[in-house]
Amino acid sequence: MKVLLIGTGGVGEAIAAIAKQKPWLQKMVLADYNLERVKEVQAKLGDPNRFPGEWVDAGKQDQIEELAKKHHVDLIMNACDPSFNVPIFEAAFQTGCHYMDMAMTLSEPHPEKPFEKCGIKLGDYQFERAAQWEKKGQLALVGLGVEPGMADVFARYAQDKLFDKIDEIGVRDGANLVVKGYDFAPNFSIWTTIEECLNPPVIWEKNRGWFTTQPFSEPEIFEFPEGIGKVECVNVEHEEVLLAPRWIDCNRVTFKYGLGDEFIGVLKTIKMLGLDNKEPIPVKDVQVAPRDVVAACLPDPAHLGHLMSGKTCAGTWVKGQKDNRPRQVYIYQVVDNEECMKQYDCQCVVVQTAFNPVIGMDLLEHGVWKGKGVLGPEAFNPVPYLEKMIEYGFPYGIKEM
Image (cartoon, rainbow, N blue to C red):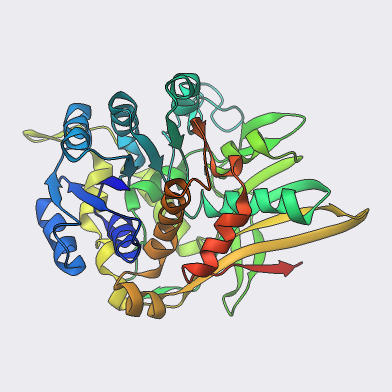
């Protein structure tokens, strides 16, 4: 398989580091706006012929198309902030490549009732074009990171193997990570963190469809496995809620994230000051997006690994019935930062995200997963995926609740 990787941030680097070990990968083109970052990742990989570097502006569809044609790639892997999804998605369609991302096209709140009704939902742009992709025989596999992605595979596995009837799917994410020397240092893209945490969270119910609520609503204490312990989780906008109901028969879908009071307080301050604005504003003689300023002021998550300690957990809490008896399970995956740094020289949050698209590439390359159109992870057989998780050294667990 030949892959054009757009974005060599923390997750992009981890994707390349994990894929490097796989013989089915013929070439992975490292493309980014920051050419110095490309060179840094290339140097760590140590195989410039297999991992050639290219400069690209991910907002320019024509440049992406040019690189795809130059390197004759089979798949375009989007490892950028989701604000770039449209040009990357369209470039893949125009060049006849398959497409994969880890976060879907962005939402827009309802103009009149943002905390009650959905406006434009996550992924609407992509799903509206599903018929075009299907007609051409191309596949856009959307939302294949850890969350969304692995959590959606867990949901499909629960439906296929663990339950006769599902009442609720609740994705729950928590960690006990500490970043030494920083009072506030997000371990993932702050641009994406602001987007998903400050937008109106979406909930799905069978008798109601998709609707929204207030950010950080419905707090609950969830006990995470493998020593992480009890963490307060709150509603956050996330793709699983938009994906799971398309393929899984259930009554309710939610996503809750363990952020902590301090983290939530910082995000609320960012919102209050208007620093979450992603549109450029005039600052003296230049146009600057406030959110980009926030990102520039914070440490790069890709370079925090040596300062981090602890574990992070992603998983899917499923409630329903099996053999006419109530059942609840939490299907999860835990990674330890120390182990990730030793094996991949990348911090655990980006590694946990990155191994999922690499497994997806593996399954597509070997014809185990097949499809056309715009599909989420729930559209495929989950068993080969879970088997690959064990093979790749990222085993899952199942906890009866």
